[in-house]
Length: 143
Image 1: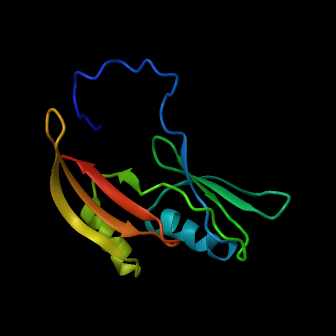
Image 2 (image 1 turned 60 degrees about the vertical axis):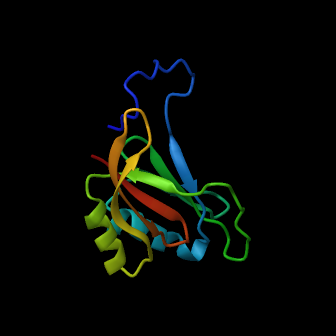
Image 3 (image 1 turned 90 degrees about the vertical axis):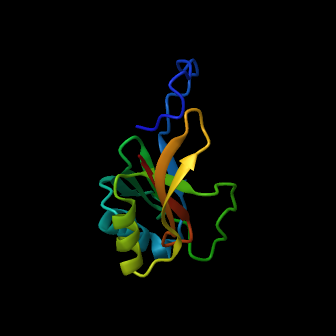
């Protein structure tokens, strides 16, 4: 998939990869988040449930991991974090940005070709949008 440098040594870490990325919308926007990622972007719902305290939860399959969605009460302040954005691998950057824009979501960076300054250089096509609860999403295509 993404090759920055074919000479990267074998993974000797106990970390095997990404299991999930988690976002926490307010409860009143939980279904909107499901509609965006499942209905609009087409991610399959792997699991959806409600905890005893009423917290709604879902796992959407990203292909190589999951997007975890956890509702928080509407009157609760969401915790601040350091996550800048999430990048979703795709071969359809332009199509996804068109779909997101047609649904009324903000396009932060229109689709464009870039070359990562890696060794060897890696061409890619990228574009950024905002999700339903303000999350920054990058669509990333290795060329």
